[in-house]
Amino acid sequence: MKIAFTSRTGDNIDMHFGQADSFHIWEVGPDEAHYVQTLSVGEHGSDEEDRIAARANLLSECAIVYTMQIGGPAAAKLVAKRIHPMKTNVEVGLKESIEKMQEVLRGNPPPWLRKAMDKDNVSSFLDED
Image 1 (cartoon, rainbow, N blue to C red):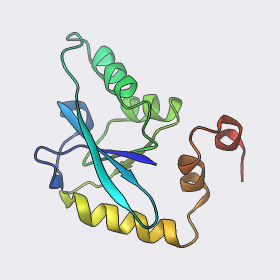
Image 2 (image 1 turned 90 degrees about the vertical axis):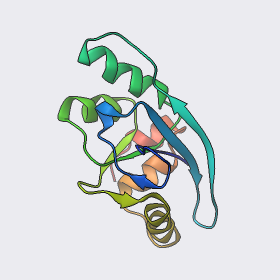
Image 3 (image 1 turned 180 degrees about the horizontal axis):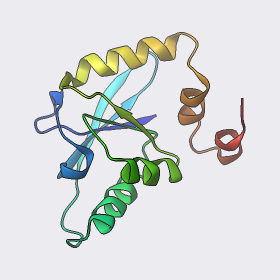
């Protein structure tokens, strides 16, 4: 599954979702993880609603967004696009976060994560466990 990270350098999750000017995208599975690309946000008006919508649209192929901080309206926009926001609250290592995610994937992932892993299957995502 694709996971987006808010990071200045690609080493740490150290940005607020709404202030990130780019997202580092990784493909993460239980046994493998690799960097895919960095997506730049660009300018999408001065209105906060436009900036949030632009970020959510940019990340439409991602199942999860790891970010240091995210506001309620932005988190709601991501969830509406079936993207699960993960807030760290503090600066954490990107690779460390990937390793922890892989550990969870190798075990028994919680229902929300199983749905995120199967993001392309709409009916699976909408089913309640």
